[in-house]
Image (tube, rainbow, N blue to C red):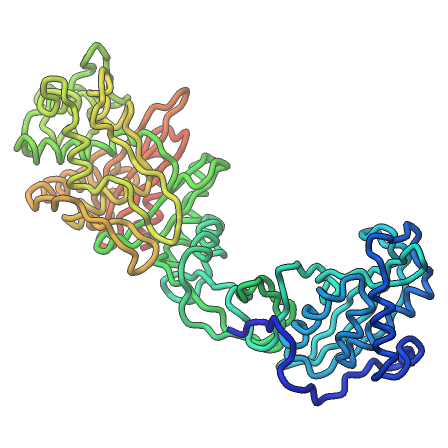
Length: 552
């Protein structure tokens, strides 16, 4: 990092710094050394900033003083230049900092012209000019301006602030040249291929900006040029690039190809423009491979907190297997309706009652009453309905975890102290149960992997662990049942015929509409999708999930 110098130049400047073409220096200052310089300093010191005239000085007088100021500055007679300002004590070290910070070897000015009364500094005349500065590693040119004031006794002075050095330069900022400082160049947030910029994907622009701000970049090479730095020497803005560096990169887990598929999938024509969100994970590692969404209410893929509907039956089934010892062949009668805690529940249209149904059969056709009956009977004890919450936390890793890079995600919720009708509703993903596509993709990944791997977007990011590993028995049961859903159950219209796929559909009621869900996995990825206003999971989210499974 090259930090701007704050003090004067070390040693003696060996290059002659001249102001060409003006012939003004001797007229105003006399000779460039000796008593005349002291006289000018005394004259400027007599300028009283508290007695400024409200009338701007004439154009001719303003240009004449500006040329004298610039002539002294170009010759590195910095005390003399500062004496032409209304704040010599502040101007001198600032001019010295300009020389040292830029490693200046030559400074010239041109086109010194009055621009009339200043619109910024009251009672001043604005004078514009061009600057050519030979600095470390190159030549820098820019246009600038000063405001010339007049005191009530007719004396003139350049009004001093840091913008005299460069337009808009703050009081706590300075200039540096040479190797560009950190912060003056922007890191590139890329996919796992190390090349694809995440900001090229509309769904990832905000995520990329957040990661860029919070994660540490690697590699890259710093270019050279001129930059604004703050009081600590950290880069604020690049003003001129002499040689381009190579931007440092922040590599993520995103799969560029799959992300492109996801971006297209959430805009698929069968969705009819409804808000949609999807997340795809590598189920072996928890690496987030794709995040895509549409809609005006933010990223519903990672923050769309909604009732997940029947996709929750994955966790309900796991709780019945782990906590009660049931199996997929255990009875789970499917009735047209069921009342629990004074609330009546019904099945989705098309579900046929079957008093002899097993858990596996009820799972395949997504019978609500089967899971409410078994869940309420076996998992609610003396009013304590915390079993589903405990299963979600202990086995499926539900909790507050960070995917990395400062990217905010919304935590799922299955309350431990659920009451009333919600004690039954939770088993079919309704009531107070909420989740995101991110979490539901993780649920499917846990089943396929036979273990929870917390989703992350940065390689090497810390991953929380689940308190207990899902048992091989339970994972095997769930895999078998999810395979049945994909081949012959509610997901078959979209996923039937795809090799190695397990799935679970969901439809959740919300106010005056339904939301469609589907979560699934294949041999490589686990994916979940939510479509707000989807008529059913298979006929909305099913299209999104199919694109990702076939595109992986």
